[in-house]
Length: 177
Image 1 (cartoon, rainbow, N blue to C red):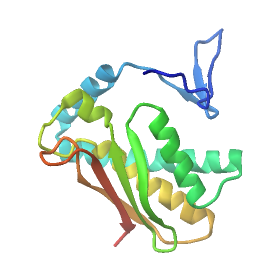
Image 2 (image 1 turned 180 degrees about the horizontal axis):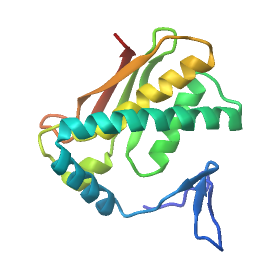
Image 3 (image 1 turned 60 degrees about the horizontal axis):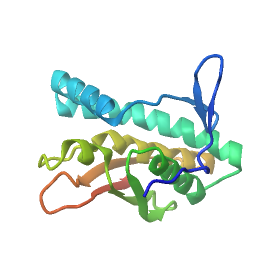
């Protein structure tokens, strides 16, 4: 069953065609288009090099998004992280579930069900959702910085739904160093 999601505010400028959600310009592309481009870059650079680039870019983008959304909606702490997981889930990347979150310790565990990568690529016996990893550390670090903490984190993917024996992805956030 397919339903509309009225809680996702999408505005389309009639003159420019620019889509906006959460006060940010958005692109709307078919999943296969995005994944095919992703795989082409991975093939050209190698998965490890591409993962490192995406980690840094995703970290920066998550920090920016969380900062702007926290300000816009008056959110702080875990509410910012949960809002981010909700919005990511509503945009077709997959269903992100916060299994654990401890701001004082700088730790989190995020479960990923219905991954767009797994839907498109299937069981390829490797962790394929590395694009998301920097997002979780960037979000956590923005929330920490907003409350005056100097603690910084790193994130890693520990399992993927694309691997045998797993039906979901799992990401761990922990203090850096």
